[in-house]
Image (cartoon, rainbow, N blue to C red; front, top):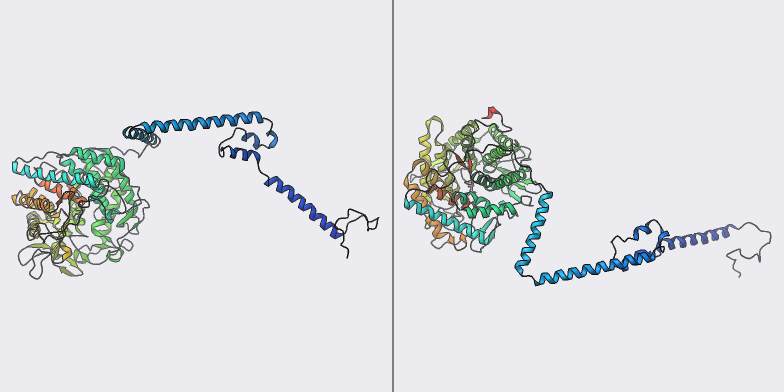
Length: 629
Ligand code: DMJ
């Protein structure tokens, strides 16, 4: 069998006169042609690029080679200046060699230097980088200048009586111990674990290290004349306090502790940094108000601005004492920045609440920020409700008594509370119970003990000339709360105490027997002292101070105790930031003369941070309407 020839290269076997090719021959020819073209393209694209390989071999990949630019326009220049090319490569090699030698030399010199010299060098370089950064970033815009409110009575206050002075000195020493311990073991963390001797934090600060104890303690340090410590705290704030962190924090806690603390430090010391930091933080809180009603979420992520409520709160509600405890700080923010947003946010809350029906004239503790409806009908002057009432009164005081709307709202609220929540026990102790769905629970929390001071503070200016009545009510609450301390083994008050089934001012449940260095009882003693000068308040304050020093003091600071009825209590190992902000400040003021932080000029926020009275008769806040005042 013969195989037909593939190519018509020879005429043999074919008729001599045939000029055209057969179809199969044409096809074969086409195949060969296309194979040839593919081969040529392959050669063009896949053959190695010599110049590239050369650069790679020299370790110069990625560096601009002087000759590289020439070759880019085509191969025309290759080989035309190969001599020059070699010289350039040679000089580059020399340069690399020289660089290596210099680096080696520097490393040798560094090794010869002492640790201190090296640290100093690193610091100088760091400072240079910081300086360069500062030059590039002009920082936040300066705030508009506003008249500084009258700042009076911020130091001294030394009592004339030597024994009182001795007590005051002791309180200052306790503050030193609390601060120094935190400085040594917890610096920069939010709080301190005084037994474990390390930092501590809770969910109210999210996953952050914002130095809550520093910010909370600053004004106490200032008032006590601990200026070195104050400066130390200021430096930390200048260099480290950054609110751009991915942390979900409590809007209320951050407002009362941080914004309140920074504003107070600003007013006391006049240092601009505190004002700037307060404003930076306030901006981070504003997204929390982006709800259908304008009632803020309980928590906000400082970085993303996403807000939400506590999982445990009734029906997804926000908490009365949280969204109702922003007014003082936010009014000051508008005053200092000229930005009406802060003022408008808190006035919006006030207006919304004024329009709502209140069961028995009482404010329930839960309000849903989506629907604007109350959650569970639970009213308390202790936790969840407390500082809402306090801020109504203080809004009036802080406005130089011009915010009559706030005063009226306070008076109405207190009237309903007196009618439904305040009772006398069989043993004659006046207590504030809790209202739950139409039923009065005969239990009072340590937190509610602040109300004694509030009633006394609000006595002047109360309607129908009831000043005497409210001062008396304050005295009765102070007495009851003192009893709750006096009836324990440690002479420190439990978290909650009952007036039921023969029980008078004592805790029943194990989980209500703890004392976590809270200030409310001492706060009430201080207000009562200021308004009456009855020596028993100093006496009671001193009893509490001694008990704290005896049972809560440990080598690493001060700790809460788990059972005030046990002579051998265990510690909770937390030094709360409010111990430095409030408990020790109120004790110090209790043993100072009245010209230190006079109440005509200062209003203390709920974390005991003093803010000056704003004489709003002479000032119009941006965003406010004259009719509101
Ligand atoms: C403080 O943070 C504030 O006083 C707040 O209003 C409620 N209680 C704590 C301290 O007990």
